[in-house]
Length: 88
Image 1: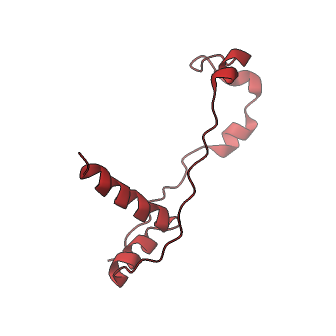
Image 2 (image 1 turned 135 degrees about the vertical axis):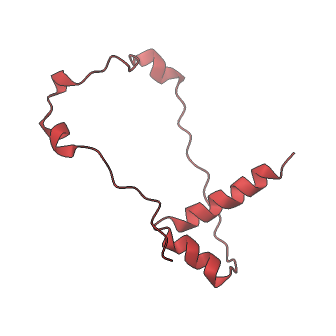
């Protein structure tokens, strides 16, 4: 049985948004951003990944590839979840 991709199609009404004027956008639920806030901010770049060679069963690799783009990122996320579940 072929698996569906986990990527979902956007339900955003792009035509409506393109037609909307800036004055019509409701910003009431967004906090005001001032220069003082930017002084507190820190840019954190992601840690670089390490390139490795790993042997996986063909069906395991095939399943991840069927999930679509970024399958290697998903493999990393599964391994990270395993570590977190088995760490004290």
